[in-house]
Amino acid sequence: MREESLSEPTFAATPQQWTPANRDDVFARKNVAKAAPHVSLEQYYSEAGPDYAAWSREFNMHFGYYRAGANPLNREAMLERMNAEVLARLQVEGMTEPRLLDLGCGLGATLRSFARQLPHSRLLGVTRVPWQVEQGRALNSAAGYCDRIAVLQADYENTALPSSSFDGVYALESSCYAQGVDKRRLLGEAHRLLARWTPCCR
Image (cartoon, rainbow, N blue to C red; front, top):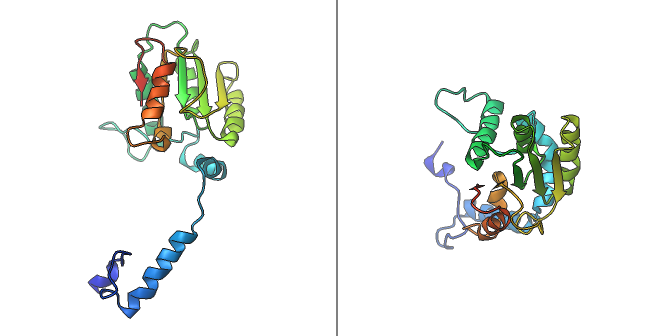
């Protein structure tokens, strides 16, 4: 295979650089890019959500946490390790009934992981996706946690929940979809919702 066949023409190429062989390809790619439909976050996760069962039997919808010596092929263990790392950083040891909030909870896998570790916790998840609310509640009920975990449909950057009402607030993969490079709105909402001097984990 010739080396040039491995390179892709760019839209920035000048007409002098185009050859008859790559000109049609450049225009074809440009037209495909124009024709690609915009898919909202809500639509994407409604349609792709069931596929996450292949990623995680517990429906963890985030990346895993690798520690030296761990089996890199045991994805579920690394996903659960990520949940444990987040919980450790929330610093709720010694709290009788910690109130924790997941901003962008997906199907609630991290909340259920916390429920197993914190039998007296009060847990709330917020998601923008109606399908995730329905399915998350069903999974919580099946696990026996429907009285301890609540899932609400709301914008996790503007929840309208009472200020200073949680002992810990966190966001996993959902923070990637928050507005702005600095995630100012998401972090501002987390700060507003936290009780004083409590941690925020992102």
